[in-house]
Length: 427
Image (cartoon, rainbow, N blue to C red; front, top):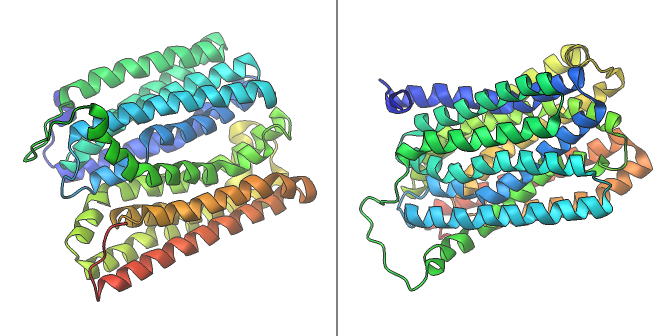
C-alpha cells in the first residue's frame, strides 16, 4: 500500500488523482453503455441505464449528504467514530429504500426479475462507495485527499475493465454485475483497511448509555443535507424517471445516450470543486469573507467555461460523434442535446453553491428549494411530456433548474451580506 500514501507533493498528487478519479467516474457509465449498445441487446442497455440512475440516487441516500459537512467540520464538532456510526445507519437505510423501490417497480412499473436484479447489483456496487466515503471524508479532512482519490480511481478502473471483459465473454448482464460488485467489495476492504481508525485527535468522547445517542445528533443535523442531495440527484435524473415506462427500452436508450454526455461536464466540475471544500469551510469558519467572495467568483468561472466549450462542441460534433460511438441514429435529438448541455451548466453551478451553503450551514435553505423543485417535476413532468412531447418537457426541466439556482445564489448573497455587519449563526 506504499503507492497510496507515498508522494513527494501531497497537494499536487491530490489534484492529479482527483482529476483521474473524476474522469473515470464521469465516463464510466458512458463507456459501459457504449459496450452494451454495440454488443448487447436493447433490453440490457435500458436495464443498465435505469439501474445506474436508481443506484446513484440510493448512493446519495447512503452518503447522507455528509461528506461536505464532514470535510468542512473545521472545529471537529463530531468525532470520526460518530461519523462511522452514522454511516452504518445511512447505508442500512439505503438498503431498505432499495427493497421498497424494487417491490414497487415489480408490482406497478413493469420491472422484470432480470431488470430488478441488475438494479440491485449496481446499487450494491454504488453502496460500497457510500460506505467508504466516510473514511475518504476523514482522509480529506486530514489533508490526504490524494489517498482517497487513488483508491476511488483504482476501484473505478477495475470495475470498468472487469465489466467490459466479462460481459463480452458471457453476454450475461446479471453475472457481469454480480462478479464485479463482489470484486469491488474486496478491493474496498483491502485498499481502505490500512487507513481506517476511529481516533479523533484532540477530542475526548463522552460515554453515552447507547451508541444511538452518540451519532443521532449528527444524523439529525445532516438530515436536511441528505434530503437535499437525494432530491438533487432526483433533479439531475428527473427526465429519465419521467419517460421511464412511457417509452420503449430502445427510445429510452437513445434518450439517455443524449443526456449522459451533457452531465459529464457537471460531474467533472463537482470533482474540480472537491479539493477546495476544506478551504471554503476554513474561510467561512474564520470569517475571511472577502477571500471567500473572490474564491467564489473564480470557481464560478469553471462551470461557465466548461459549459461554453460543451455547447460549442455539442452543436457541431455532438450528434455525429454520439451516433457513431453508440451505433444509434440520433439526428432527431440535436435540440434535446443542446437543452441538456445548458442544464449541465446549471447543475455544475449548483454543485458549487451546494458546497458554499453547506459550509455556511444553510442546509435547510437548500432542502427547501430542492424539495419544491422535485415535487414540481414529480407532479408536472409526465403531464407535460404526455401533452407536449419530449423537447417541451426538457425546456420545462431546464426552467426548474434555473429557478433553483437563482434561489441558491440569493441565499448565498444574503448570507454573505449579513456577515459583513453581524455574526451569522448556524441554522
